[in-house]
Image (cartoon, rainbow, N blue to C red; front, side, top):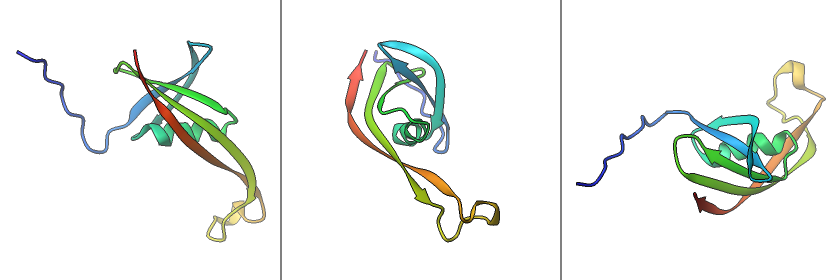
Length: 97
């Protein structure tokens, strides 16, 4: 009989560990989707992003960039007039381990 996997709740948070040189680092990013975690990693300055999903045997591979932009018009008062990092990622693929 085939194994059944328990389905996660719709709004559940997933954990992704950043890998560098094929090894886990201390950086853990959370999100409902791998892209959300990759955007967080790109905002912190990582460009070659390989995320290992905890509890699953797969690696999500992204390339990321970030640039300085003005805070949006609807930003809170303490953020107005400041510059923020705007990140962008592109998914290269998934590797099953």
